[in-house]
Amino acid sequence: MKEKLQKIRENAIAQIREAKNLNTLNDARVAILGKKGELTSVLKSMKDVAPEDRPKVGQLVNETREEIEKVLEEAKAKMEAMVREEKLKAEVIDVTLPAKKNNVGHRHPNTIALEEVERIFIGMGYEVVEGPEIEYDLYNFEKLNIPEGHPAKDEQDTFYINKNIVLRTQTSPCQARVMEQGKLPIRMIAPGRVFRSDEVDATHSPSFHQIEGLVVDKNITFADLKGTLEEFAKELFGAETKTKFRPHHFPFTEPSAEVDVSCFKCGGKGCRFCKGSGWIEILGCGMVHPHVLEMCGIDPNEYTGFAFGVGLERIALLKYEIDDMRLLYENDIRFLKQF
Ligand SMILES: [Zn+2]
Image (tube, rainbow, N blue to C red; front, side, top):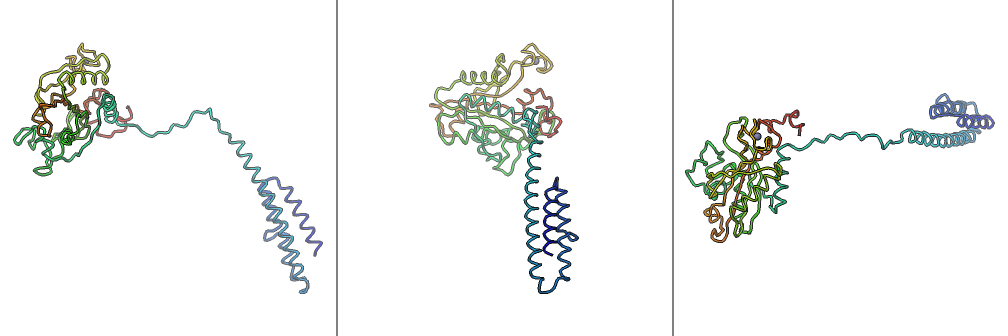
């Protein structure tokens, strides 16, 4: 029996050494240790061994089994290491291949336009201020010189939550809130969503965005307003851009003006884009009404200021030559992908 086991052991080790890959190694394991394996058959024949010899034979069988298993494990580990190494060699990364494009989407035209406007004004020393979209009538109207009975307060123009609370119709309430804090001088822009009771069409929406600016300091004049907005127009539409100020009326500024920029498409000659006039209306502005300063706790005899407001969508539409505002809100991927 001892000799038989010795022979099995030698055969097994030889078989393991001969195995060329993990499959043949596994075949060898099954042939030796498996259910129908040589060693298993020895165990099965234990019944023919004299009872007094069985413990000794059993021990021998176990020792042989352990030895074969050890050799098997070593061979397997060696082979797996080889396979891994070959795999690594075969999978060398070619760093010169073009990278796989990671499609993470991009910003909305409104956001691009907003960031551009913010960049320009931050460059001129302005602060960007945000405020609540649901606002007190007091801040949205009263403090901006729009008293009870003013047509702008009509329910046809404004969404009322109740008698005293509205969805803000402009971002100017942010300006009233900042002025009230009394920290002077002020140089700020207030971008954000505003709401008007409008029907949706190519140029109107019940919800759109405004960027309003405010400067309050000593000795601020209309010349500062003009210079600032001229610079803004040149930064936004190109160095050749001219500006034109037309008298206008706003309740919170006096005097007030509307500003046109020379058409950046035709340079002012007149084209389809500017409807032949050579000019494009871009924003409203004016010197802050002394009454507004007063209501917000600022002495109009000591301080003056200017304010302006521009529609964000208007800039996005002009900048990208989009002819229908609704496209900006419909989230049509085919449209948005173009920017
Ligand atoms: Zn034009």
